[in-house]
Length: 573
Image 1 (cartoon, rainbow, N blue to C red):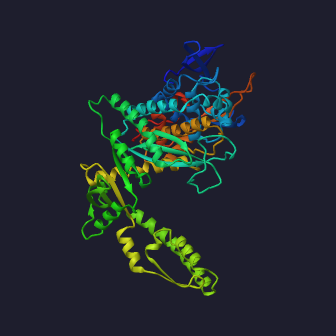
Image 2: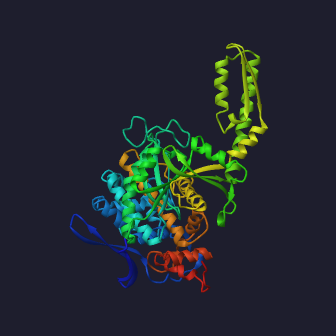
Image 3: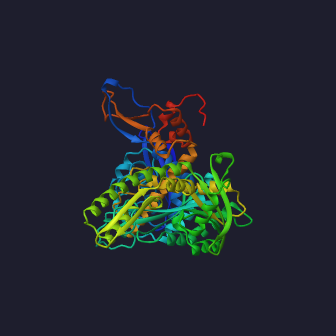
């Protein structure tokens, strides 16, 4: 992809802008050249503005920015080398298809049958092949040829290139999992789409799981796993260890480190397992996890933190955070436990408790009426009370008393305000962090765990309505689902790296919306002379941030008239 260059050529007395690239043809065993005409290089003819009309637009900014990032990483070459130069016969390679789908997911999410229309509606090009070569049929044929091992090798090569080019910090990686709904019929064969614990709460759909390891800065996914929707989260992380080891060995080699770097894996409480802790230690990784509050070690740490003066204010950027630290045994493991207090978490939990308490009071009042009417048995009453108070810590401060006989029970209940205040003081708004980084400061431990938010933010971008949504998915075979997920994660990486390159504090969605406004307006003009009417691409008015994007992502090579929108004023980052 780095071989693409743009030049001008005279044809029949007129000058045209040509894009050319050299690609390796494995069938012929040599490089072949591709060329595509971008348009006339001469100035637009003088025309009467009253005789012109707008006939459409062409994308420039968002597509051009992501293609620039892909060129910086030499993305297509890495994928093609890892996949053995597979591809459609006489058509795009697997790398070209994957990057095309990734950019489509980020700029204009839609089915693969719309890929041709999307590429035709964009001025920047990632390949000199015609847009008609990028069809849904070509994608599905190529997807069946690519193996999971080849995609993993491509991930490692791409991650190494991203870390080197954009100077990413990868000593601390955050890990988390999610899943996505599919509409695959139950009778359709496949190993990935399975009925499991869907994040969307839909029990009628088969889901596909995704586990991602994200860099500490920049929200950049470096390694991922696609897994069956009914698999456990712990098994997914355990399956990632081999790929993670290969990734870090590759990074150490690329960075020229004399000895292996210290790496840390951060995850939430759903991934706690003593065996997984040992596996991480054997693989050479430090562990940082948020323990489930019901764990015995977490209970002891919370009791310690509840003592007067135990919680200390941190310093620096974490001056608003209080934490308590203790070194203790977690089972047979020697660990440092840090109890962290979060006001934002506390407010969210209190809101959740208030909503759950209103529903519980309504249900308990209904049970009072059933008891008074002698229309409920004691066993049913106990079962319904346990179910009602199972949410949001309600059983901790809603006191119930059941008496009477099996057929005529009695019920007494009330909300204990003192127990509720004790719960808020000792448990709510607090997390218990567990790590084997005994030499790290408390502030460093807290800061590293906050990187877990990077994965959650990445998943929000991949959900419906996000920047690079995984669905709706129109794949029914495992190979197509696997390559579709690879392209989606690739799109998330391109957006994250574009945000780093632009150096903006805006959200990824706001950045992509601003880049999408850098588009060419197609105007058809007439000179009232012989010949076909000319179509001219007009550049838009640009904001200061958009002018900076033109310079950073070199968008003027695709639309030279963008330079006419640039000012001589210095643009500050």
